[in-house]
Length: 413
Ligand SMILES: *[C@@H]1O[C@H](CO)[C@@H](O)[C@H](O)[C@H]1NC(C)=O
Ligand SMILES: *[C@@H]1O[C@H](CO)[C@@H](O)[C@H](O)[C@H]1NC(C)=O
Ligand SMILES: *[C@@H]1O[C@H](CO)[C@@H](O)[C@H](O)[C@H]1NC(C)=O
Ligand SMILES: *[C@@H]1O[C@H](CO)[C@@H](O)[C@H](O)[C@H]1NC(C)=O
Ligand SMILES: *[C@@H]1O[C@H](CO)[C@@H](O)[C@H](O)[C@H]1NC(C)=O
Image 1 (tube, protein in one colour):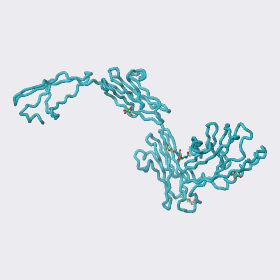
Image 2 (image 1 turned 30 degrees about the horizontal axis):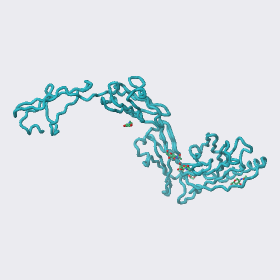
Image 3 (image 1 turned 90 degrees about the vertical axis):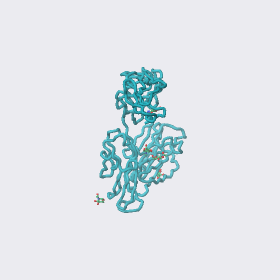
Image 4 (image 1 turned 180 degrees about the vertical axis):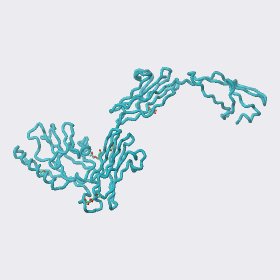
């Protein structure tokens, strides 16, 4: 941006305004002084613009922010239109009044070198004649460290275009700008502070273009995070700027166990392991091919994360389940079937006597057997001596035969 064209633009506005004023014969209001702001590349600037409603009564209005006689940002009835170079960078301030700013105030973020210059905040009242006041509110933005290209001044800005926040669909490519002022500068890129070329999951999908921009192609859900670029010039001066990457995708199941055992008579949880960005809006369970709606099933509840909670597990809960998560983008599909098996605690079918008496050198057989509640599985039987050390044994029919007892010590290993 060179200053002479900015000056011509302003002159043009003044001439037009002058005509507007003379033909409508409005009383000139006392001239407001421009506001001078200073910021740096990569930073932000807040332009505080108050809307003076005629007689201080709020009426419909169109807000314009102009540069060089061109409207680069407008607001009307909650519809915002921003020029290409300002998209995602020029924001109306939310709840401006509460924060002590005028209703027309904007926050210009990710400042570029070319943002230096004049800005005009102008309000148009479409239902009123005259539809605008004679002159807008003027601002001049200076950017620290902007010096003519050939000179080297310590602290000069090295960055011409910093990166801005981006949101992409997973799988799509994304590019972040990081344009250096001088062509002798080098650009390096970091994700969450670690150089991208040193990150295994990124390495094969990233490239840094000749103009310094970073391209990730394709993006993956794990790429979300903060990306920063550092520019180093030929004198070793450095400057950094950063932006955030948001990767969105349909809600998807990331893991589902084939089989889940729930304990009969006890409370239990059946999880659906999913990821969603934007966040989960709905999660559907199916059981044996039919919609399973916990609201219609007694003793079963949805947890906030979509898991099913069973108050007291019984046989009716056994079956084949699938879960399907949804977010604002839809769903990536259902989980594979999760087979839920209700397990009763094992029961003894044969228990040992209370007391056995044998002579030293005799063989002793102590019977013990058990059965699972659901009869499908044979429980594991483990023997302990009262001292809780595991015994050595041989399997014999329905019971366990201890190795021949040679003495009281033998029972201890
Ligand atoms: C509008 O305001 C700016 C900044 O205060 C001033 O420089 C300019 O002369 C004004 N123009 C008119 C037509 O009043
Ligand atoms: C302007 O934007 C910057 C960067 O996002 C933020 O840190 C700052 O709080 C914003 N200022 C206002 C007044 O909204
Ligand atoms: C850098 O810019 C200078 C001046 O604009 C030009 O003479 C030079 O060839 C450029 N060097 C490279 C590597 O592009
Ligand atoms: C960029 O995104 C981050 C993280 O979501 C947020 O904190 C920051 O305010 C955003 N910056 C701008 C300029 O919108
Ligand atoms: C879901 O929430 C419950 C607590 O309500 C928790 O115990 C369970 O681990 C969570 N499941 C997942 C997959 O995060």
